[in-house]
Image 1 (cartoon, rainbow, N blue to C red):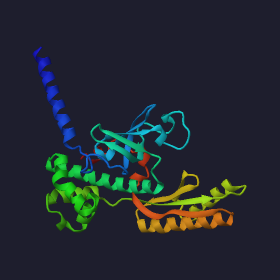
Image 2 (cartoon, helix red, strand yellow):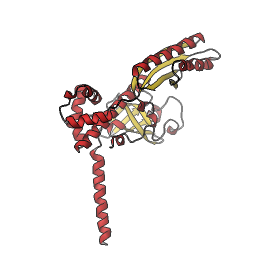
Image 3 (cartoon, rainbow, N blue to C red):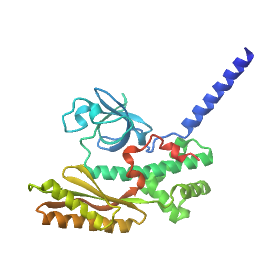
Length: 303
């Protein structure tokens, strides 16, 4: 009987310590506890119901938002399950926030292609900065929200974002006024040189009889520039043309050449071409795999 009681006490102590450790290094990315109306946010689908899709907002410590069925897609669908999948990452616009009730209404329909690109870039950078903050907090054995309050959020205001500060601090260590050793070591660990994604968005149309075949033929011209360049359909007639590589400037040049090759071929075939978004570096390789991102954002910072 004594052993059973003793074992239960040990288990309870272990669970308390584990819970404290888990919450010790959890915090939202931003000083504001809730997103503002009109913000573009990132979240993971937690459940899909007849009402709509519930999203856990990654950058707001998993606050829950809702995309009702009518804000998911312009297509007619019989159920939300046809337009969203549990565990998938989504990008949505904030339609309404009621902080007193904890309601956050979202829309996937209102997000433009350019807003999606910008959101992916910002999320990648915010996530990198956040994981760096977790590493610093662990080195200091300091509560993450406390560290954000006295260190992270003031710097984010001063430099436009915490990511900007860390990038500049790499070049000029004198910018670091507090926890210099821990911050420098954490930056070196997190901000390693990595591959970047360079992408352009284009509009390709052809209304001739063999239009679809002509579009496919024109798009295949990218392989003449670099076999690693990929083309994916965003929604007819908009395509993304992208490559993942280490040299971002080289990527911009090659994606531009690939787009011009597409333009040349589709015009010869009687179609049309327009740039929706010129080639630009949008961040790391993580963004390429965004829709398959796991829920272990913070676990990546484990040492």
